[in-house]
Length: 377
Image (cartoon, rainbow, N blue to C red; front, side, top):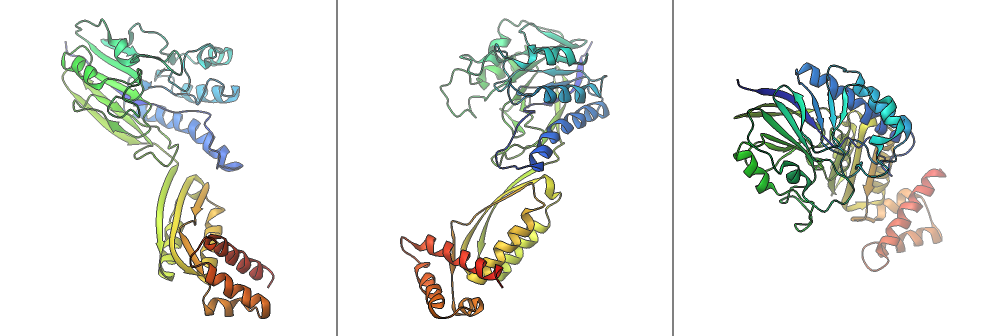
C-alpha cells in the first residue's frame, strides 16, 4: 500500500521577539503580528488539508518569554484544534534547565493539538508517517543533531520526515562548528530511502538545500531583519516515498525593505517621495535607506521634510545621510534671508562643506541653521 502525506512546514516564529528600533505602538504591533501569523498558519493548514504543522525550532524568542506571550501563542494554535502542531526546540528555546516547554504555564495551558518534539524516539504523526526529531538540548550543542537523530534507522515501508534546526554545512558561517548539519550525509540517507524529507529551521529565508528537492528551510513566517532575502513564507509539502511537491505560501503581514538612493536633482527627491508614498501598509513596513550625492541647502531641507512626513505613519524609517553632501549656493543664501555676520558664516560653512576634515560638521551645521531659521519665521 502506498503512503503519502500533506503537511505544513514552518519555523523560526520567535514569538516574543523585540526590535530595538521599534518604539511604542510599533513594537506592540510587531509582537502581535507574530501571534496573528500562527492563526493564519493554522487556517492555511486546514484549507490545504494538511495533516499537521511542523514548527522546526525557535518557536519562542527565548526560554524567558513572558507568561502572557506563551498563553497567547498556545491559544492561537488551539483555534484550529483539528490540526496538530509539532514544536521542535531550537537554539533560541532549547531543552535546557530553564526551557519554556517544561514551565508550569506551558504545560497548564497547552492544548491537546500541541505536541513538543522533545525526544529522539520516532513520533507517529499519521498512519505510516514518522517524525524523526532533533531537538536542541542546549544553545551550543557539540554535534550534528539532525544527522545523529537518524543514526540506526533501518528500512521502512512508510514515510519518515526529519525535523531539524541549524545551518547545513554549505550555508554555515563556520565550516568547522560541530553542530553544522552535513548535507551530503543527509542526502545519502534520502537516496537510500531511510528518510524522505528533511524539514529544517534556523535560516529565515525560504531556501532549498542541496539537489534532491527534499531538504528545505521554510524561512520565518514574519520577517525579522533586513538581511533576509525571501522571508514571510511557509511550505505546503505533499510527500510520497518516491516523490515530493513543495509549494511556498506567503503569510507575512510585515515587510523589511532596504534601498540606496543617489540624489542629483529635484527629480530624485520626487522619486524618493513617490516610493515612500507607495508603501502599504505603512504601519507594518520597516525601511532602512541611505541617500548619497550632492544637494543644495534647499533640497536638503525638502528631503528632511518629506522624510519627516513619511516617518510618522511608518513602523520604522531609518535614513543614513553620511554619503550626502550638502552645499550652500547663492540661491540658498538668499533664501535664508540673513545678512551681515550670519551671511558670512553661511558662506564660510558652504566652502567648508565641500571637502576637508570638517566637511561633515559643516554640512550638519548648514542643515541645522536652515532648520532653525525656518522654524523662527
